[in-house]
Image 1: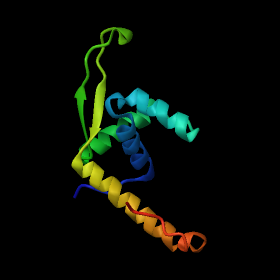
Image 2: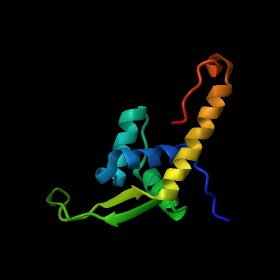
Image 3: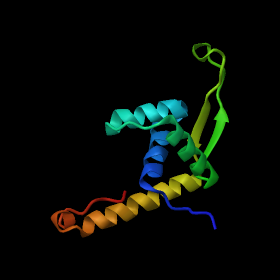
Image 4: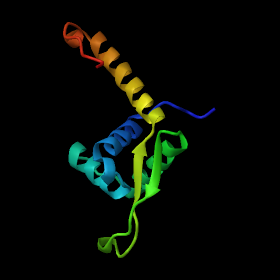
Length: 113
């Protein structure tokens, strides 16, 4: 059976795909990861995670238009599927549930939207 849960790194990459929207290609996703987390990431790790997320049905991709900046090469642009959005919501709701059970935050109920 295909695993349908998200690991932490997978969740982060999937969120960056949603954040970047039409600019969600591997290099840009890695760049955004490094910018927002302050941690380095290899392009290979980004590519393998995008591939794994696509295999799980959480992402789709299509080739963008050729770019003169890239010597005529095209970018693979990723988008989140409905299943991917459902997985993100489930992951978010689970984490909010845990935070709401943590005593220092238990009196301040976090919203699940």
